[in-house]
Amino acid sequence: MIKHMVHLIPGGAFEGVEDQVSPFGYGRGEGVDAGHGDPEWICSKEKPQYDTVFQSLNPIDGKVTGAAAKTEMVKSKLPNSVLGKIWKLSDIDKDGFLDEEEFALAMHLIRVKIDGHDLPPELPPHLVPPSKRN
Ligand SMILES: [Ca+2]
Image 1: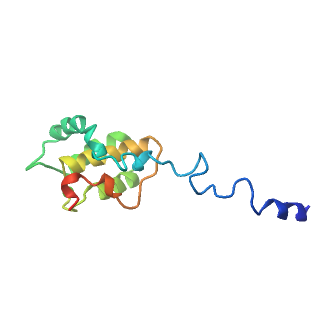
Image 2: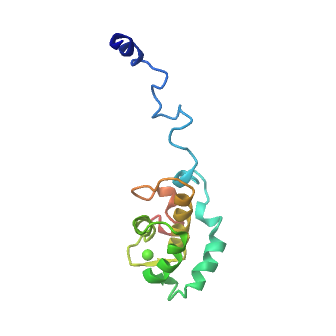
Image 3: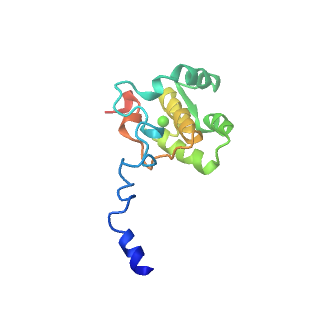
């Protein structure tokens, strides 16, 4: 019996599932990976909609406070731990405020998470707003 199992291990049918061979492997073009390689910032597509929400949060000098952003972000019903992570990824310049682009990014990441995708430990370069890439 044991001998039989040993024979199954090397070169098994599932060898290499961690690569893109498996249909269940890391989803290229999905979740946070969506928009990778596009010339356009992925958040631009939905930005007009996010801008409307942004304006409703009474931005001062083009930025909303953490408290104001939070009132919108909690509507997602995502746990605080997840929203905290989204905040950290979105407040790119770490000034404690979200500008229009950072807010659109936060909304995008919320959608990614709600769609069942994982959040990255660090923001991938293609998700960084164009004005903050330098
Ligand atoms: Ca900021």
